[in-house]
Length: 124
Image: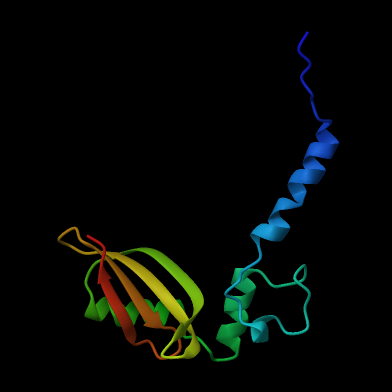
């Protein structure tokens, strides 16, 4: 006779609740962004973005979209804000995915403080 082990729902829920702790870890975080916090207290992405905005490290996305829209026509279909290295320095980058009027997909990396285009890549 074959036995199937069925886990008690409370145990299963408890085990599954541990997964987000590791999934939320980001190897690319700058320690300065999370100074004085443990990994369990680290702020969520939206909190980090807001704090960076309040410190003047990034410009509002509405300003960036207005500026880039004048330079690159198309529809923005994706936006990411990330911390990365550029020219040897840690900087905030907006990464925009743009669908152009002729159907091409572009990936544009923008310095989130200055608003300048750092990289433009045609994904097609």
